[in-house]
Length: 299
Length: 299
Figure 1 (tube, helix red, strand yellow):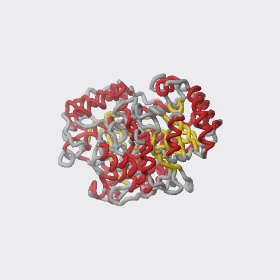
Figure 2 (figure 1 turned 120 degrees about the vertical axis):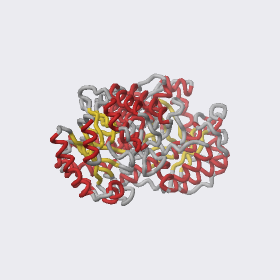
Figure 3 (figure 1 turned 45 degrees about the horizontal axis):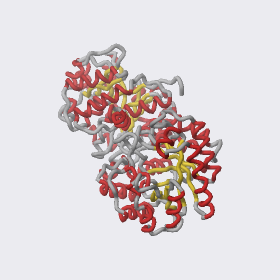
Figure 4 (figure 1 turned 90 degrees about the vertical axis):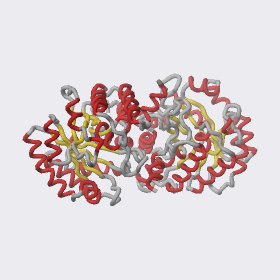
């Protein structure tokens, strides 16, 4: 795997912070995003334009996006649930958005109050506006390896949604194990099938560590040829479906793995570890990155 | 991997407890061992016959071994550093012992005050007595993927020590990443070389999770054909070389992985999770198993 490159999509400022109980000021969010970029992360999901009634932690999305001093060639993306959110994102100059659906009907209903088919239909108008405004669109598929409400999820359902999002115009499909229940063999089976509908270089993986499997699942995905990994500095995020359990895989742990495999991510691990401890201090929580903990003790 | 079986060597009562600051009573140790066996673990490293001056946590090794109501076909092994320890183990009916050397000269000197060659020589008399008394011997090789004192460790050094221990009569060689720094690619390279000196079914892996890599490294080892995994309930143990960092990989997390891969370990995960929380209560520490944490929150 010597000269391979992997794209890390840092989701801490969005997926991470929106699942933390502690509210963080706009200034700190801006500083977090800028420090992550300075540490070498080139893709940072920076905000979510959802209703502050549902996700108060993301209520300052416009202010965060305005606050960032954007560096060239860095993607500061934002999650967008609907046309209203898209318009707000466009207003503050967002160049890449993410939309989300799910592979589980039960999850889609509970999370977005509509069926999977309806959720995909709702995105049609966003896709058109995005194309008209030269905005790239990333598609998330949730619950690809299990659902907190319905349990098992068919691989074919994941393939269908992934294919639909890709054909709609999403340039990248991020496969999310929302509750972290998947294991490596299932990951391989899943990617093998999704690849029939979406080219390998357009597939990303978004794994949660609730059952300690995230890094192993990432390794299995790398073995399959996947080159896009979502992760969250210090493992920010937690798991809303099992309070107290771990959430997003920590970016520090991913970078350590990639370094060991000789895969280039462009990230300065020492810098990143420092950022992880700094933001955990602000949140008053324990750093969930084992690399972060080990490197702190050593220094 | 459908009909494959894997042997888990549960090291919590020994490697785990000896690295915990809190002293545990003999009664609780006996109960821990018996509960682990009842949960389906067939190999439990139960005590260490080292000097209580060095490891006070293991000072009651003889009482622990005497206290256990031994089940048929279950291996209750004990670590033995020298002939004196072996004699003490023999006295209380231990049927399998473990001896340990290292792949790093610096580590061997610091840990056992002698060179690797000397450490191996010291074991000659133990091996003879073990054979004479029908006691099986397992060999640990420490620092196989890195050393806290010398840094890198040559693969050839690991191969040499493993080969020596195997040829001396150790029926199983457990490769220990003592400080948890290894990653999957290095694991594969290592096992590829060790297998030239020790048959695959005599190789075990003993990984620490200090840098979050343990489970991924186990997965890589499984891919190579390794069928023996050391682990510690609730991740008991910590890392003496980086205080606050994680130690032994948690047995719960290993069993969850194996279940997902369709590999049989014979362990009842729900039972095991209960034991993990129970012993952590006794120790007054946080359960290090993510599976343990997630399953507790769900129940």
